[in-house]
Amino acid sequence: MKSQALATTGERVQPVRLFWLATLSMFLIVSQALMASAQNAPSSFSDLAEKVSPSVVNITTSTTVAGRSGPQGIVPEGSPFEDFFREFQDRQGPGQQRPRRSSALGSGFVISEDGYIVTNNHVIDGADEVTIEFFSGDELPAEVVGTDPNTDIALLKIDAEEALPFVEFGDSDAAEVGDWVMAMGNPLGQGFSVSAGIVSARNRALSGTYDDYIQTDAAINRGNSGGPLFNMDGDVIGVNTAILSPNGGSIGIGFSMASNVVTRVVDQLQQFGETRRGWLGVRIQDVTDELAEALGLADTAGALVSDVPDGPARDAGMEAGDVIVSFDGQEVEDTRQLVRIVGNTEVGKTVRVVVNRDGETETLRVTLGRREDEAEQTFPAAQPGTPDEPSSMDLLGLTLSPLTTELREELQLSESAKGLAVMDVDQTSEAYEKGLRTGDVITEAGQSQVLSLGDLEDRIAEARDAGRKSILLLIRRGGDPRFVALSLEEDG
Picture 1 (spheres, rainbow, N blue to C red):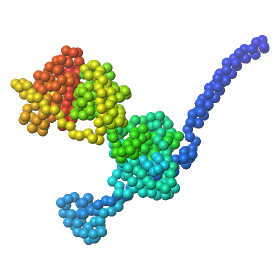
Picture 2: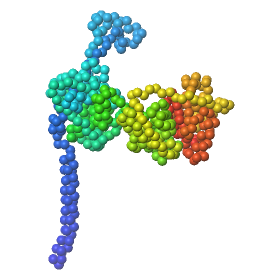
Picture 3: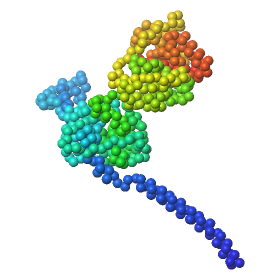
């Protein structure tokens, strides 16, 4: 009995031991994983900071500001106190009216041993003098080689007696969200300063056509503008440009222009002193779900051509209503991507552009022009509308009238304007929600020209017969075109 009891106890203990062994093993595995993860995080940035510091510079600019010639800004014009303040200024003597010097601070970094320096355009914009201060304390004057306001990048040049330490650009496309980064510069005029954080987001757009910003939580403040954002290899993957802040200080949302954008700009500024971007010569808009349905497209990929003025695209046979799905071998996702691809393509290069036209794909060969040389375009003259039609009609939540000489004058349109004028918009309609307003002109419906109300009715009937749920309208406002898809159920 005794031995039996011991045997029973032993049987109960064995599973408990196995449980604790399994728990201990799991704990060891998790601990090893955490230790391995911790090893990826730098224990210190000191080696990196020491390595790159000699190549980072402070930038001081000096600008002449005209002196005041009167009490502007002190009292409103026409105020009874205006004469009093003018007399007060006159008593201060002519010295108060002299031009004065204004200084500003920023950052930059050396990219070549012979003295080329990258910074932001807004750091040196309008400056009469630019002074470079090195980490060692040495100062040298700099000249502006070229600027690009579109990406807020400027290239400077200094003459140094010895070869300068410099940093190289890295591949910003290789930077991933969560990667460690380090910013260096001259925040708030406090001198050389380092801050560290991670890549918070990629491919941010702020306001520019060619924007491609890396977002970081590394502290960036005023004065950091133009300074470098480093990866852990000491390569520059961004140029610190802007912050998002309600109070002017860092709240952990900073933006650096991606190095893959900056390198192209710098190369052109160094070679030509200006940028030379490719130009396709079209007006485009994104393909929405409604537009895709109206065009009979399977998805919203691509860029919809809303107008083709005189230029490279028209010469190649591109038409309004085409959807650009591929450019020079690259699939086009949306308008922003297309603008960047075209801008980064060599001027004068002949490229293959694949478009979707009426459900079929066509390949066009376009020789790109230069964006900076783009001139104002005019639209072809219109044919007169159809006579003897109703003066107005309500369709799709819109009150429409064919353009007449009187209407063109009333709406301040050119004599060549063609189509149907929007005289009123039902504020409860889909058309109003999608931005149509009184004074807009409908020039196409279903990708066909409309010169009369009858033309529009025919296009609507054709769309319904084809089983379409919406119809595509080309709208012009002040000469600028855009496509809008309106549901046909509302007019049913």
